[in-house]
Length: 168
Image (cartoon, rainbow, N blue to C red):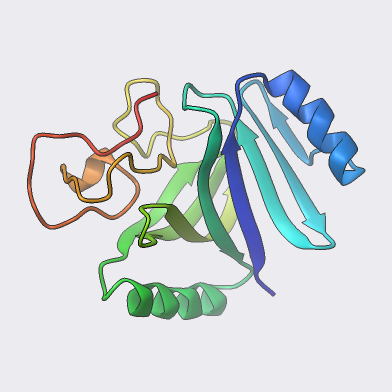
């Protein structure tokens, strides 16, 4: 069974962990100096927060698959929704987990990831070209383009010098 995923950038991790723990009625299942995650069962949500230099607010949405077959099904949905422009990130380390994933943008430019978690890792990850080492960045402008390795979300086909990763 798939699990909805929400990742929010926060400015004060300690205060946010306290708030969300009280809001959800449970403590996070994973806490790092810059990250926390709750795996809620009712409703089934993977809710994550991080304090890694991004502007506060929604970082991205997603769906977490429990099996490779579910991930393949989600890939089909992403391809249909994006006219086959989903970014195949493949196996990567992000958010203290090793995962297989792909990304797609909605019409407003919000990033959606579909992923299958393979294992936990001791590091946040390095799947972004951001100088601060953050990953899972959303786009500032979905029409911009840069080299695909600079962002972990799909880019338009036009090439410009403008960066698309959120640098805040």
